[in-house]
Length: 214
Image (tube, rainbow, N blue to C red):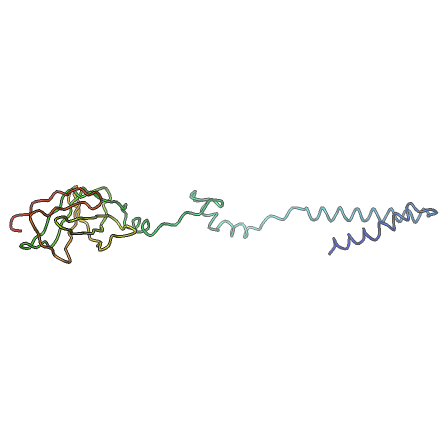
């Protein structure tokens, strides 16, 4: 409001003062009054300009204390992220599950299998592979029987997309060997030329001999 009034004063009084100063036959008192008015306007304008440019008062102790507890300031003090740091990317469901279980999702390479038979019927398969550091507690396994081949797909951890019919089973670790037991939901007839194959690579998996009496 003060700035508006000052502007109107300049607009109205400036022409009058100029007319009083330079008009013909003007007395000295009138010219002195014109000079005084112009000087007063100029001084008021300067004071108003300095007031607008004056530095703002420092924030109070309470305000500084509240600012120090914001999440960005706390993160910056911890050294992990500053106020201008980009937000961390969210974990995918697979990464979150692997982080919670403490193991990395991986595709093991089976080195041997052992067939479980009941007479001439195959009822289950035990899969063996070299144990890794931080071995997962579970693994997903899928089986596909076609002709004389039994294909196996094994994936440790929790993959984002299982193969159709895959089951998550517990993993045992004995020494440097990890294994899991797969019980067939539909037993199949066994024949002498049945071969286990790694579904990921297509390579034949060695068969362990069955213990005596099985």
